[in-house]
Length: 252
Image 1 (cartoon, one colour):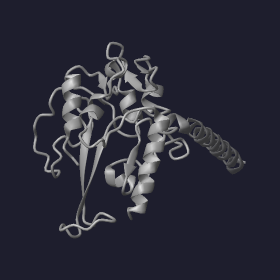
Image 2 (tube, one colour):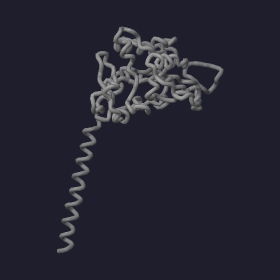
Image 3 (tube, rainbow, N blue to C red):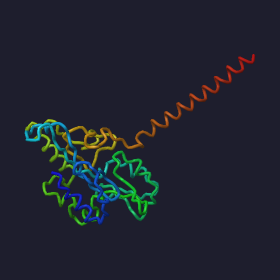
Image 4 (cartoon, rainbow, N blue to C red):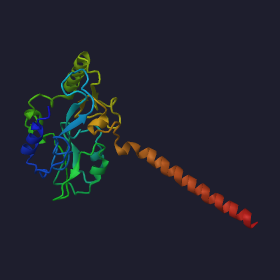
């Protein structure tokens, strides 16, 4: 419902600095995007169409709200790009940045297909959601899920969450909201990342929520890239040999 309790709880628990209190002009969204000091971001998406299956006095207008966060991908681009081993996969299958090891190179920032991870201006190191690694290690619920008053954010065993989410989608479809679907639930749904450990129930195309429609870990394209380089090199050699051959014929 856009209360932003999750944003506040995240900042309080992780002692994150404020975002400057600047007026963005983006509806009621004053954090605008995820970043080094914003690990949870509630997006207010305004649409000039009514919400499917519902009637309201707003007419041809509706709000979509999504609490965005690090996806803790099954195949994490940031982890694969990190040259120092600062980014690790924990025993809870989450992706964690070790601030004492990070050297601020920024490779993870450019690798992430979701634009989640970011470097902090004051120290240059990379930061992102830890899924409250300290809390879940103590058998506690992450701060965002604990603070959510509507249970929009749910935490638990991934298989149980999948079943719960699929049931929710079926219920919405029965209520006439046939646009509802799960984004990033598994590798079949999102092969480019192997599926997401933080997945979402959406009511419109991913682009509407500022999510990539087909995110891909850059290293999955490495073989194709090297093949293109090899073909280019072969082509250059062929052109060079052809030029030499034609040059000799011209002199002859």
